[in-house]
Structure formats: structure tokens, C-alpha cells
Length: 160
Image (cartoon, rainbow, N blue to C red; front, side, top):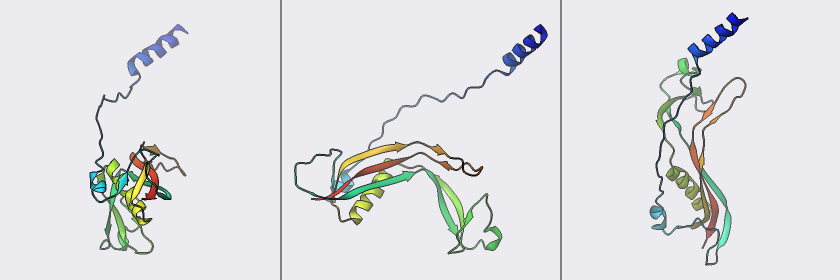
């Protein structure tokens, strides 16, 4: 009995537990609103403004880090079903290959939200909220798709 316990203690001592230690990081992020305010678009994080406005709707813009898609129609049917390097587009029959990795920024999400607001006819956005979206790992039918970290920008589109 003592030999078994001693053997187990020796195994735990020799193998040990490996703990992944993440390094300390500190950084600041700023978002420049001036390109949009110079165009006459009103932006505020406040939900109260001192002028009359017409509420047009809620908007959201999202940007997630990931690989850009490169469409290559010259690859032909030989590589259309290659699960490692791409997927098939049934309508265009073109081959999509992952390109370079692109890091999402808060400006990307803001650009998407303001594009949506402008398509509604808005010239302002109030109650602006910028949120960090952490990475997500989901399991579906034994596959583990990865959604990389990103940003979400939400607010109410208004017309002054």
C-alpha cells in the first residue's frame, strides 16, 4: 500500500501541473469621432440631448477579427470541396480561400454602425455604447467554430 502511494506521489511530483500564464498587458484605446462630426454627423454617449430630434431607430455595428476571404474563380472544380482551405459558394461556383488575418478595431464597428444610421436617413447618434466582444468557442456537431474577439457599437439613430 505504501509503495502505491509513494509511486503516485512520485508521478505527481515528476509530471506536475502545467499552468498557462498570460503576460501582463496594459494599453489604452481611443476613438476619433472628428471624421464624422466634420461631416455634420452628431455623436454623443449621452442619452439626453438639449435639442428636439426625431428618433429613427436603434442600430448596431459589429466587427470581429478574422481571416479575410479571397475569392478565386480560376481554381476550378478540383478544389471546390477542400474543407481545409475553403468552402464552395453555390451561386457563383467560385472558390473562397482564407486570406490575411485582420484585427477588428472599435473604429470598424463605429463605421458599420454609422453606415447603417446614414442608410436610415439619420444625421446623429445618441446613447452611443461601445462594447468589447470576447472570443467565443462554440461546439456544433463535433466542430468547434471560433469567433475571434471584436467590438460592437450600439445607439439610437436620430434626425436633428
